[in-house]
Each structure stands twice: as structure tokens, then as C-alpha cells.
Length: 531
Picture 1 (cartoon, rainbow, N blue to C red):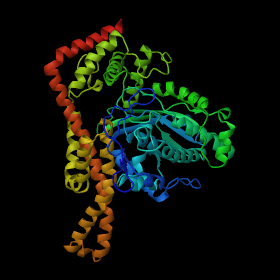
Picture 2 (cartoon, helix red, strand yellow):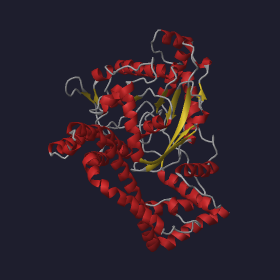
Picture 3 (tube, rainbow, N blue to C red):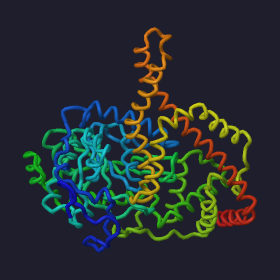
Picture 4 (cartoon, one colour):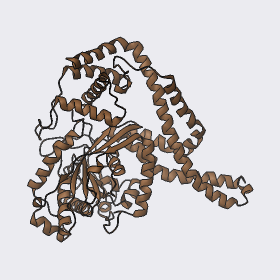
């Protein structure tokens, strides 16, 4: 269907479409159902003769803003594994995809390389967002979900994807990083879904280009993305870079080498693509929860907390909790005991995990988790007066900046909250909308607010005592920006303080209403661990 000049519309929402395996295709959102081929074909091409593939000025500005907003969005963001990578060669980072734009963001903010970026086609056609993605030379990708629904003809999709994959491959061959998500769509499962072949085809082409032009062959890097609660504001994030999977020269056929010499795209042989995918799949599964559902994941984390307390060990941060939960999972399901074609893992079975599941469900129903257990893991920890005072102080320090926050961030926060809670893109897109509005809308709102404050001060004569009111107004315009940033970070700290106080209130309520039952359920875990 055509809607407007040069725009096609496909069916958004659930429509029962399936792929050649009979599996349901990803549901199209309103944004991804709009196809503008002319805009997609006019996307600026990356540059390989410089360190930054996109516009250096706009890219650097975007990353400054990304880091500022990420510091407010996430309570913690940690990473590990970079020391095991060879940064003299290109890197194709592959991760599971459960948190929309937060997934590539987490990789790009922790990896030292400048990235050549590929993404869903509507990233380069959306209002406001496209201004930045085009200047960062983001390359659009057509998914099978759009192709099979008629959004693109097969020839159009092949031409666009061929150009995109060749651009990504060339960037990787020059030593840049890239991040693609082999599942092909963001999802709500607690395990990876079926892997597509785009990243493997791209890295093979990159290896061919690198070999022809005398550069080191790139490698494929499995990446574990861990979010405590992916759709929560101020959640914890940990990025885990796994052992690189090398690309062998023997995997590159002569016709692919000949094609890249002509700056053309040729499909790598299916055998080499499949071999790379089969090497990536078990590794990537291990770097995710890889369990039946999120209830089972929460049970593993509770079990990890109880075991740690029984052994008098600390789980001081999100990373240590992730690793402890993985150890519990691997003890119940040894690595390599699952067929590659088995997408959904078998449920984990053990008396301790069954008991932990009951505790996890009770904690989840009351907004708590394993961190709320006491040192003996036989109940909930008591509310510390010092902790409560610290939470209250965090909230109090925000009060002087509240008017500034309302002026500089009120519109963005409201839009992000409303759009994030009403989007048709699933719960995983909630924080994406909050982040995008905080990032891009601020670039519009802040100059207006800052200009208004400086202009009003000048017009009211408040700057006359300086002797140079025009210069003072200009300085004021720029000096408001760090104050706006500080107000946003102050709000984030105040939110953390509120979470501390709220957690204490919730624990008190659960102790009163469910204390005896929770103690009995925790005792069942201890008994099961002792057997």
C-alpha cells in the first residue's frame, strides 16, 4: 500500500505471517511498517579514510550526549573482556537483542573502536532521529519481516542489504567495530531465539576485503548483554565480551575475493556462513540467561544469593550476581548438552531451584529481589537508619535544582514516560523512548530554554551591573548547559534515594504480611542446598 509521496505501508501489528520454517515473523511496529525507499537509498556512505566513519563533528557531539544521558539512564554500567581482544583488527560484535536501542548503545559506549553502524531501516527515516543517524552514517537493513510482508521487492531488498552489508564489511576490514544482532529483532524471551546469518555473511566479506588489501582478518566477538530489569529507569547494566571467534582464510571462496576487488557484493558460501553461526550460537547462549522464562531467571538469582550468604560470600554488584546465577544454571545444565536447533531450553530441575522459585515469585510480587535478603538468608534485611538517611539526603539535594530540571527536562521526561508506556514496540522499547527523548529532545529544548533565560535576564537589566550585558548574556547562554546536565544527574541520584526508601517500606510490609511464609520458603532452599 502507498501512503504519501514515495512511502509504502505494510501491515503493522499481529497478522499471523510466518517464515519458511513456519515460525512467526517479528511483528511490525507503525514505524517499521513505513517504507521510504528513496530516503533509504540516499543515506550517506561511510568514510574509511578517517578514524570516524560518519561526520567527525556530529559523531563526537552525539557520543558526548550519549555518555551524559547514559550516566543518568543507568545506575551502573560495567564491562569486562576487552583485554582479551585484538584491537588491531576489525570486530563484528554479536549479542542477543532484548532491549531495543539500549543493546547497541551498551556495546558502543564500552568498546574502544569507532563503529560502523547498521540498523533497522526506519532508524534513518524517523523524524529527529534520522538527523543524527544519517550524520553518523548508519546503514539501513531490510529484515525478512518487511520483505515477506511486501514492504520491499526481493530485488530492492537485495540491493539495499547488499550495499549495507558491503559498507559494514569494508568498515570492519579497516579495523572499525560493528554490532549486529543475529536474532534479527528485539524480543521478550529469556533465551536467544533463532539466529539469522547477516553478521556471519558480513564478517566473511570483511575478511575477504581485509585479505585482498593486506590487513589483519577481523574476528567475530560474542557479547553478553546483562540488564538487571531491562525496562526500568536506573537499572544496572553489564557488558561481557567473550572469546573472539576467528575467521579462517580457508572460509573465503575465490569468487568472494574477486567480488570485493570489484567493490561488489557476493554471497559467501552457505557452508562457511553456517559454520560460523554454529560456532557463535552455543557461545552466545552461555552469555545470556538462556532459560525457559524470566521466572526461572529470577529463581536462579535468588538461589545464587542464598548460596552466597550460606557460604558467607558477598555478591556486591550486578556482575557478581550474573556470574553466580550462571554458575547455578551451568551446574544444572552442563554446557554443550543442547542441540543447536533447540531454540527453547529444557526447564531446569532441582529441589533447591524449585524452592528458590517460590521465594523469587513472592519477592517479585512485592517489588523486591535477592538483594533484599538478610545476611543469613532466612528473612529480609532490616532497614538501616544510615541507609534511609542517605536516601533522604539524595532526594533533598535535588530540591534546589528542581525548578531547573522542570524547565530543562520536564518536556522530555513527560514525552519519554508517555510514549514509552504506550508504544506498540513492546516493553523492551520503554527505556529506549525515555533515552531518545532525553537525548534528542534536549538538543532542541535546551537552546530554547537557555536562550529564554539569558534573553530575559538581559531584557530585565539584571546583567547591566556587569558593564558588558551583551557578553554576559552570551556567557549565560552557554553556562546554563552544564547546569541542565547537573539537574538531570541530580534527578537520577534523587530517584536512587527514593528507591532506597521505597525498598525499606516494601521490606517492612512483606515482613508484616508474609514474614513467616517467606522464612519457611527460605528454609526449604537451605535444606535443599544441604542435601
